[in-house]
Image (cartoon, rainbow, N blue to C red; front, top):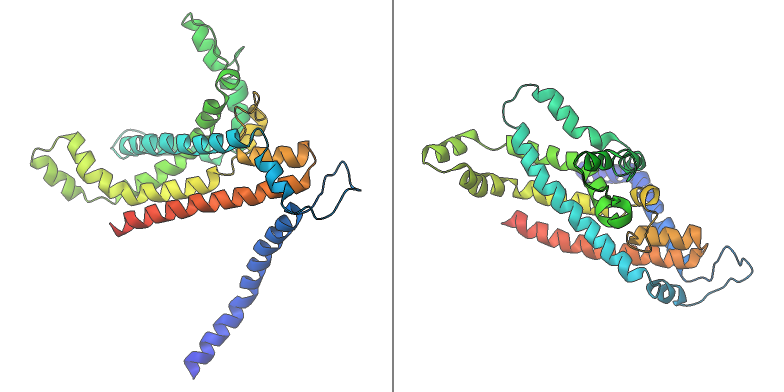
Length: 290
């Protein structure tokens, strides 16, 4: 009887937090679903009412919708590839004994503490500016014409900026996993004559598999909502070359003042994010079971 009463007391103590979390999640979602079925344009406040699923069809029929989906997936995949590959290489490098290892690790993780819009502005004005940026000056020094990164390759430039921000996170996770690897196993493989490449491929990489899946899952959740870097660098352009799904929703809501269509876009984005999350969770589940 005491066990049941203690369980009831624990549930009673937890119930306010659970109720608050449910309200915090359900109320915004319910309002988004409601506005997604309403004719609600801020430029025409007198034209309101239920319009069935017209907002959804209007959002999907937007000329930039297909490009936004493709750009979002390319952005996520591009950043994941760069951060995982470079994260493994940097983790292997700073795991070795070297002079000034502490300051080096601090410098490696420092980009993660810079706010995304600030980091994007730094890259835009100090590095990628085709007139007086560092890359332009380096090109002039080599006798090459400066390259307009944000104008000629906007999506690739944003991928580079976002990857630079998320590289410290991947490096820290992978470095922690690498340091948990038994040195005796590596020494035994070295004594057996295994070259460094085979030691990495058959010992280190399988050991890092779970950490890599964690990095991929966490980064994907956040990368699906990348917005600030696009707003302060390319503003979704040129045209829709760097327009992603979150930026398209922003455009519908705050540039076209169509709150109904933007709410429908938010629902579509949630559905796509859940599909990606389910796919990743199944892939990670198989990896962890293996």
